[in-house]
Image (cartoon, rainbow over all chains, first blue to last red; front, side, top):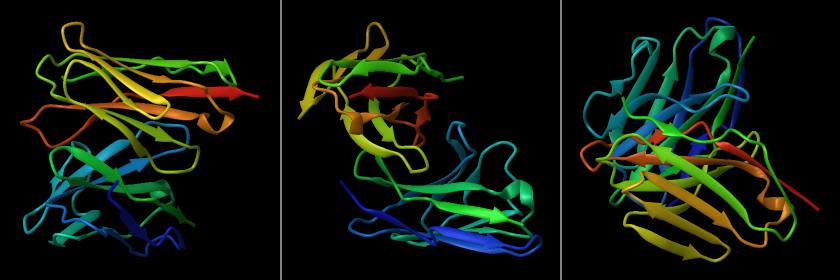
Length: 114
Length: 111
């Protein structure tokens, strides 16, 4: 299958700081990327859909000013958690759509906000 | 509202047995169906995709789709302890780009 990378894999930061997470499709071009969040033992929750060169579409209840998404190229999307707080601590996972409909997930970024 | 239903489990099977995981979906317009495996603390991994009625086999995995019954299943033959994970069913329509995920079924394969 297609390969999607994420960086960093783990980050610990202080409350009030901003954290940027990168998602890259390594061997294919992804016109659409997705950002998910998953709390322990809970289901995946879609946060936003990102199309290359256009503004992201956020799911209901997700603050677009807090979770900034940029999809500047066909292989890179970034998620910036601004002014992070302990309640933002979670597992953030991106995915990229390849070809017809298949989505491939990155390995995830575990964010801990102290 | 599109819904994808899965039994949360856990489904417990002995090593070497066949594990059968089931999924139903509400949207009759759904065209694409996927099974993902998620190990604890890891991200989901795509293991099977199926688009037309019938069976699709890949190694020890067989996906089965019945659009009339709005039902998709995953069979795992010769189950191994390493198959122990949560299996997510995902569905989408051609017109939409987002997948609708079920909550997943936890599979436990005992040695």
